[in-house]
Each structure stands twice: as C-alpha cells, then as structure tokens.
Picture 1 (cartoon, helix red, strand yellow):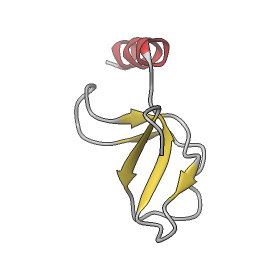
Picture 2 (picture 1 turned 135 degrees about the vertical axis):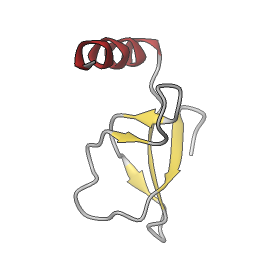
Picture 3 (picture 1 turned 90 degrees about the horizontal axis):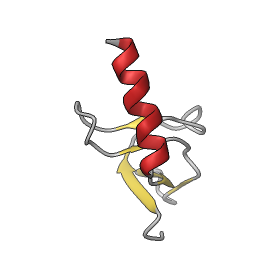
Length: 66
C-alpha cells in the first residue's frame, strides 16, 4: 500500500470493484472512487485517495443533491 492509497475495512466481496466506497457519515470521512485491490483475507478494500479535484466534484454533487 502506498501513501496514495486508503484501506477501509469491508466485508463485501464481489461487486464492490469500481466503488465508490464511502466510510462514515460526513464529507470529511474517508472516501475513494475505485476499489483497485483487496487484502488477501478480503477484510479490507484498497483504492486511491481522493485529491482536491475529486473532492470538488463530490462537494458539488452533494450540494446539488441537497
């Protein structure tokens, strides 16, 4: 795992690839847009950390949805 990835506990299996995976109830909770890998024991999903551009798109979508 690199500094550009996030690992979230996840007991889901087939069908989680492609995400998005969101953790928590707030916009500052861990979020990433594509499940790229899993731990060998399937206990966590790994994906890229959202940067400023991705957060801007998320924030705009959240504002429109409300």
